[in-house]
Image 1: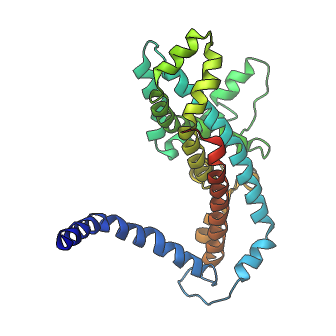
Image 2: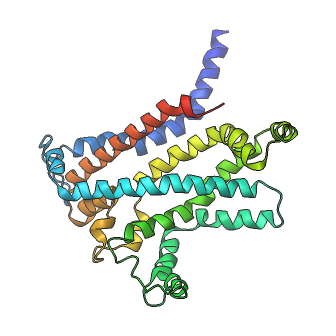
Image 3: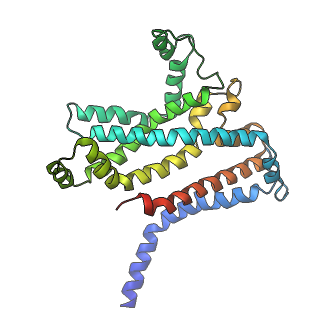
Length: 293
């Protein structure tokens, strides 16, 4: 009996060994290595010296770090609530019986499988001041052309619009699966009691969709704090709006690969990790109050 139990356990460990090994090599070991490098003055040529918490002291007095934090929090504050709201509305509409439903689902999901570089290039053309389709459309209503990606007041918000648009498809699939898991009998009982579509949405759909909404919200927070590709492609270093659009990950990239201050960049990565963990912990604590199973 013990021999069979031991053999079953060995097979189980062998099955999960590749995954555990991969996580250990590509996630756990790099995390602790980065944590150690954040305490050194690691430079471009791989030589480093242990300097303690000097990189973190430098972060405290670095105005660019606070600017990057501000930009990132503004990005998260707008992109997550608006993105989850739009995804929920789209998923609800695509869960109904409408003509051409499959085509609409494919069209909404296409941005999720499109390279961020391609998305950024297309939207840069749309935002162009001289021949962009957005300015041409607004000119019909008497608005003057505007350099959306070169204006410090609008550049970050222009990127936020692109991020929301590109993430709707992924979130929609998850929420659509949650909607299809809600039993129809609840809606039938509500209709018998005289409830309308709006009442059904707020009293039935949202409470029963809360597990999917919680997952989408948590993942959106994590992804938003790590935004880099769209900002990198749409707002370069020579852009007048660079400082007003630079996120934490962009600040990390600048120090690690352009200024070759990799020890300092490692400290930035550790701070970002702490911020994400703190927000995720808060959301998990709120799970019992906000999620209905």
